[in-house]
Length: 358
Image (cartoon, helix red, strand yellow):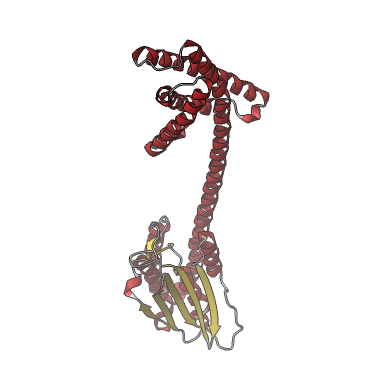
């Protein structure tokens, strides 16, 4: 279907423009065959409206004969212009005869023949001009389609990358958990059994959340709690958790499995290396249109500083980069025997910056 017919407003504007062109056509007819304005307008206005829709046929000719076909396209357009102008002239001849019989309008037979000849001559270049406009429209349409395909390809590639990065989390976490279970088997068989049960519950939960584009922060924190339950079996009293979560953040939407790797990194590279363990601090708050999440853990004050260490942190960084948001970033900092990872995201959700829910 011609794009002009896609919207009634476009069609109405085009019809009005065609009628405005009829005024110019009436002036041209009065020059060819002197006659009153009323007579000229009575013929020119319907004639102009008719040809305005007649030249829209160039849309289909342009699609059938694109410019890439070279001379064939030019010949096809010239032939279409002659046919369209001829049919238009014939239709106007019928209209002129009807006006002469019913209302007595018209300059006489000789003048009418001159008018029809002028209409045929005018009709050919007008049709060719319409063809040029339609070629431009088709070129713009092709350009937009190419841009849309490129954007869809980029989105598909980004989604594939995000899925691949999320898929890396479970093997990475599972490897660490199995090492922990292996360490408990000999010293604490009951603890190893409980850890296996909680690990199974955690993995079932990650499968449910990992398939979604976004989850609420409350769901993400619930997943973190399940992970901490697993590690609690291993560390016992050495692992303490401090939560400072603003209730207004719980409905914010976040990518799934984004906070858990930060907690895992804090335990593996912080608490696990400390004989006395320590407190793992979780924070969540709003700052304007941003959601700020922080994970802080103690580190060996005498050890070498290794900011950003760990596969989990690298995966989080790459996932944030794939999201393509200027408001999404991860910062890590080590000061005074504490390691802090701060995650900033758009505060999507009730009261936040808005955005699509996954």
